[in-house]
Image (tube, rainbow, N blue to C red; front, side, top):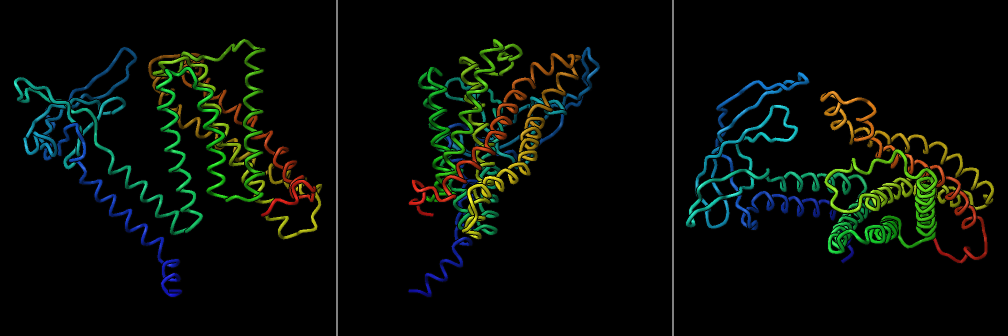
Length: 375
């Protein structure tokens, strides 16, 4: 029995990788579970290739394809179709298709027979499943149990997020701040519980994360109140069908939560390791060490947020510039809300340093109320 357990401990990551790999292969042949018709492309031929330009001298090419394929599911399975697809070479809002790809179809019928068909969207579940499998494999190979717990936390958070989005839709967006505020607390608690475990380090990190996030949001609300929200262009939020301000605050809350949790985890994990290596370290020394650690990671973390923001807004900003919009208008319509979110997250990052140092120095420095908590 012990031999079997030792082998399981040694080989369980490989077994999980192989099983999940088989699941990916299954997803590659899952057309039958979809209700919407799917076509496998068997041939693609370019029938037209024309130059296009606009009043701003932006140049592109409009390409027309004749896409031939076979329906792979539903009552029309096996039927062969030919569909014309027109796309721009830049593929900003249109899509080119290639042989062996699977696409969703919209079929138009008359008396039960297909009269015309159009391609709705590319079927991407196989690519997505492969990327998830690759991520899981790397985590298991390099980090084993810790990697598995990290992946599990992402899966749990994804399920919770989907539940929160559906809840928000059912309430017509009237409770968006309550829903995502509650979700933020649950996110933090479950993530830290799964990744760190039920110990004192988890309690310290959770308290720091919630306090840092809450304070940054409160400061943002106070600034909005005193400035009457001048310069906050909620109208730049695209495809919003509910009140934009609560939704923007909910986005900011989740963004700030991620940054604060990242930083507090790093600081408190380092200070916990310091306490274990040097049990005689004082609360004052813990606070000073934490402040030094925070000072070193605060700058790179704020820059990471900035780079993410730039990467997210760059394509749309370039599109605005190419259509003769000014710097001011482009910034207001594409970047202003992202900058505000980055600033609020930056406030949370800065405040997290003294919060994490203070809470850790109290709980690890021998204060009696916390001394009873187990590691």
